[in-house]
Image (cartoon, rainbow, N blue to C red; front, side):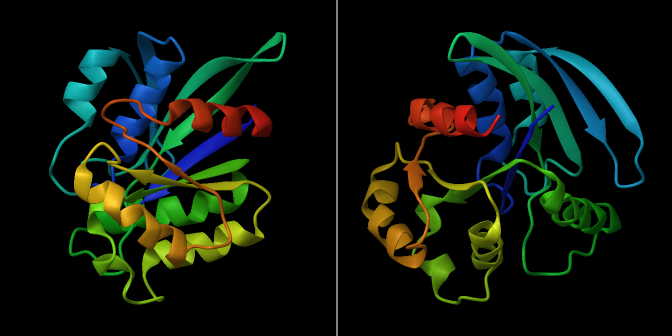
Length: 200
């Protein structure tokens, strides 16, 4: 089964994107498999609304390990199953919490084994977050450029400040296609779905 992985900084909107993308594909109830750094698995069943209440939040590092769900979508005349995996947000700093450090390491360690990387960037933090090309987003981007399948998602495009920042993101990452999205309102998901369909 093909696997799509969502990466980005903490609070960039990865988990909300994952859940609302599942909803966009017609899913109302999901089974989420949580996989710890040590390899322990725990599967839980949620309604989509329950998952948003429990798994999403404004606190940094709400997601601390891999969270995967199996989804299906129409590709031509066929219905194809694929795995969508949400990850712990990664930042440049060495975090004080060992569990978060392990979650970041787990995210980075998984990059080479997936079929499609969905890189989520918070458009409201640009251009301040891109003053240095040593940022973690540049590292993800540079890795994505040597991968067979990578797409950059500019999140929070529903906000006016984000719209004005899109040209800065395009200038900072000129070698990839950028899809402006709103994880909250499911905007731009048709383009994301088309990209996923090409890679599963």
